[in-house]
Image (cartoon, rainbow, N blue to C red; front, top):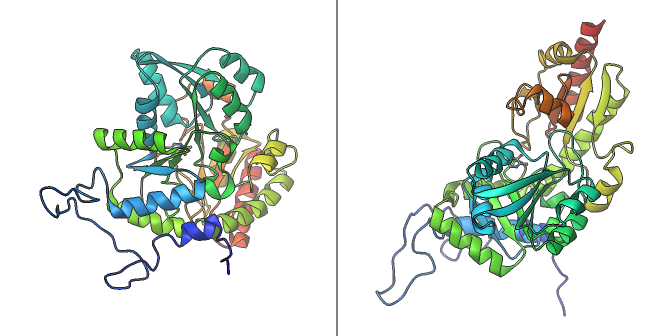
Length: 391
Ligand SMILES: *Cc1c(COP(=O)(O)O)cnc(C)c1O
């Protein structure tokens, strides 16, 4: 009799489980060895040196490729080393990159410096506007860089439409899927060639590893990126991979609670008089709501909102919170709050902040998996403090 098919989520969660022939361990051991013995001079082993290949890193990469529906994963030391690798592998000298104008700040810095140094050309485009994307991609390009939802306003890009335009322009399309994780969005199924992750965030999920990954749609692209990872030495550490494999096993379960808690927080925010605007793709009045409903299987746990009273009101709100840490980064089990204008986006000029819609009254939350009632009560008290500032 045919066995029922096992879902990608279960296969990823169980990858490497119960496979230990030596001791029958349930969980795979960590292989920390930097090098491996050759059986004879004439025979090359599967693993020779951990920069080029490591069994623990491979297990993590395979589990992530299963989740994204990809042919293979290159696991790197950080999200930014994955980004650097993608540029090196896909953009020839003098090549052209079309990038979303509100990319993650570190990616913006990388591409801008490469462009300033004359290594490549970059055109910053509002890719949520398909007319702008079409105009930019009427000219040939090597790489299109999409990030949806964006940071911190959670703007949504039509990934399938941009992939089609990018391919017509002769480009490979990379989607940074850090905010959704493959549980909520799978860009390869929408036509992307490559998915980038800062696995530091939801994939690891416990704020104790910095890591990155590139998942390729094809074996050919994967082999090329793998060659570059070994050659440049950006491959991730085996112990970090072991921790991230552990984190990945609870990704789907964590995302369910993250989203449940985010919904409770959004409910508080939309009704509170101190809040002038809530940016969350799950809200029907969010400009990307319909698109997010179509291309994501959930709205995630990042929320940004504006309070009346600007910077002073945000300070009153944050000062006294007991269940949110004031910290950059996102996607961990613990709740965080950040003031984008003063923290994550501090390098931007006032004018650039204005153009990007990042006001002094804006806060971004990464809602964790604590008890939602505790988070809501804590934020409600903070919002009352913010309201008292404006009077
Ligand atoms: C954090 C982040 C990165 C960079 O990843 P690191 O692991 O910090 O190097 C890239 N893209 C997005 C969307 C991020 O949030």
